[in-house]
Image (cartoon, rainbow, N blue to C red; front, side, top):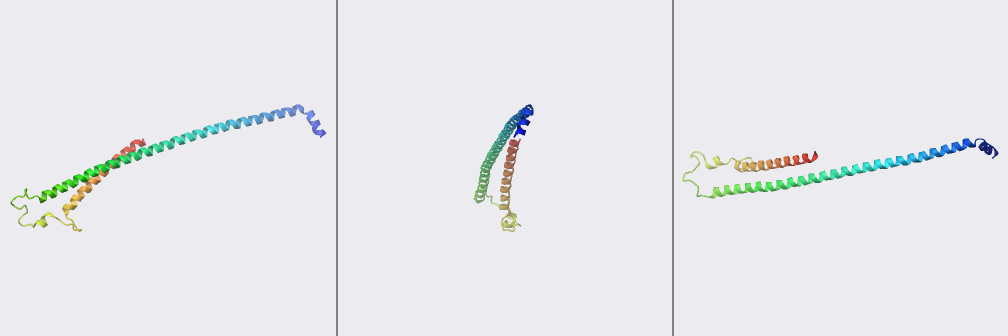
Length: 163
């Protein structure tokens, strides 16, 4: 143990300087570590706040899109009912007109050479008359047009909130 004691006596100032340098290094290391940890925590909190804002924005957009879809769907349902009522009333009026005999003239409207059945109705392969299929085509065309208008309206509203 005497050689350690002799070494310390000789290099006492050198030993104290080394010890002081070691303490300064450890203190600097601890301060740097705590500063780095604070910066890391601040960055982590910033990222969490940005993520929460993004999630809230996505939820708001989804809510607005669902609301637009519901409004367009309700509007389509209302217009579809009105359209169906219009066709139902026009068919009913046509049926009443055909049944009514007060407006018939004395003379037949058919030509003398053509039979009544062959001049009025053309049957398709399923046996449905062309008049009935034309009425159905008219209903389908009106329904399809209504669908197209509602889809365009929905798309325009969705595109408006996307910007």
